[in-house]
Length: 370
Image 1 (cartoon, rainbow, N blue to C red):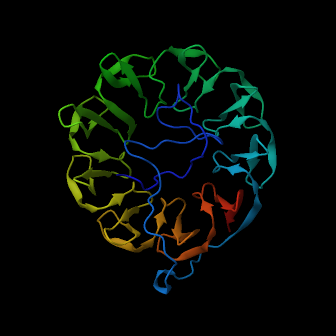
Image 2: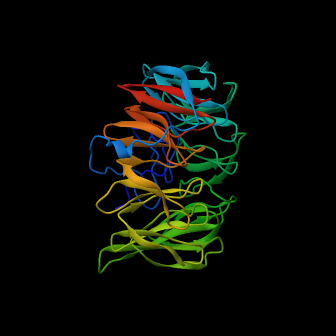
């Protein structure tokens, strides 16, 4: 079962439903993972041993905002959504609340706009806090490829002027020019005009990443689902033989068969043997894996264990740093395994734009790389 986190931009409250196929970055909405779960692996808890304590990194960090928010997400486009006393707004990279905390909910900025909720309805604002698209939607998604999925009385897609471009659709976000669509026989893909370009024949499918998308078919007899990959023309490149898969990242995809994870390339060749209890996507040349009988460490693209196992939870690398958990606390390491921040937080997110959200007790604050 895939349970290493692959993206740390997650929340803990309710997820959008009508426009929620592949996740949102919202201050009060969870971000689902891909073909497999995106919850962190929990290796057996234990206190850190001396050999688990890495050398000090040359990277240094300092506190930007003391823990005071009820919730906080990573920065994107210079702003981060935060929640305090039930109201959401945005802070800048200096820690200033530049868009007032007046909204019921707020999503991360993408392509210059953010979906925000006020009095039960969703609309969009720009990075100056100006209302660009009116608050008329029951649900709204983030912009991707110039379009956003919204739900008023039905699912549709709008452009950044608020014009309806596609009526209906599957409710998933566009990625690499295509979005998951729903048909009478299953799932397929549509283009930005709403035309079906890959037939809806799959029982489950995921977003395109690096020109490839995971697709799955159910076997009613065995009550199992098998996964493979197609290209943007709908050609099956990797046969549907795997129990679980993650999307392609840096040219490789994690795949599981018979409860063991490994990695394949875009031709379907097994380049790292299926030998791990769990595996995450590659980011910045490294991937977290869980070795049977041990804890988590990081391998490179050749499968070499370059950061030894020793972590209860190991997140993806971002900006040269990864959040890791030792015992009960989170800290950060660099790509050499050196300690950037000693384990001291109750939760921690990835670095984005030089800043990371961290939690102490019940409150969130931010640290910055110097």
